Image 1 (tube, rainbow, N blue to C red):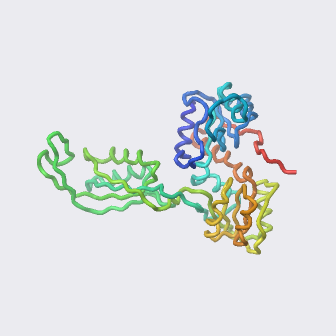
Image 2: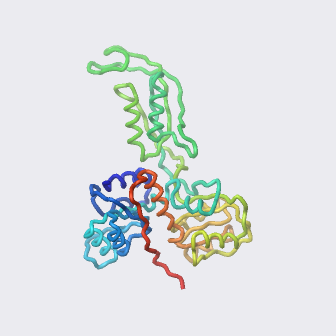
Image 3: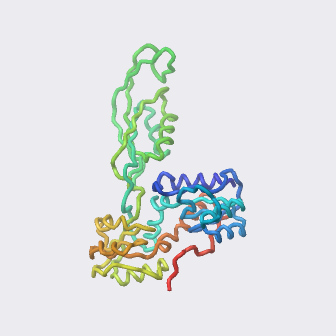
Length: 364
């Protein structure tokens, strides 16, 4: 299989549009046209991971954390990143990463955390903003069902847990076909009036091109009139962190024990116990302290993330229990998310997990 088949599929399921501006997700090293017989999934990419891929005959490594973050002006082997790049290229190993875009998608890293904890009624904690558009077009009455379905099939009409969302209203359109026009109905040189349906539907901006193409291909008119508006609404289908509820509330000490066992976290740090029973919990994989206020507003009694700094614990101010389970511990299950996506599409392709623990932090 060519690398571009795997990467193209992952790009569609974990859109690169979702990644933060500082990030570098996607294919970083390698040729999209290369043929591979197997791939390996790893949390990070180290020199040992590249050696493992070579040994196992895996031509592609898919990681959560990218190898290349900063601009590279020279490759001399003087840094860890340099040595990884050189070793990968010498051994014809390609590297693809899904980082902050995997954090943001529905079913991504934070949702995995919530699932492992057994949380119910899970929703995005901080939905994406300024990512929605509205499409408006005008369609002859007898073609409206066909056009509307084409838009839905292309990804339009998703609002939270609802799909196939649209609004229609009736009206009368008019046009005067020019000398070289090929009108669907009516005659050149004569004004024509047609009963039409105005269709309105929402779409995420990264699907704009596909959805407009679907409109043009399904619409009967030679020239299709349509408008696209930018919406200020939040996009509830994706965003950072998530929040959910336990079926049965638990006390704080039992909650900390649950975190330790579930994430195999050997160095949990927390703010002062609040004395509250924990029902609602917010989580964010990696470094998610920026979502502390979102967690408070959500009504959570606890917020779980990684990489919390000293002064952040004061900010909890007994409004909730703030817990750091570790960056690696909160995100390590990202490999399982990637594996499940690939196997669903390519069930017979050889996909292996790296056996190397890449966590650079040790506990004494």
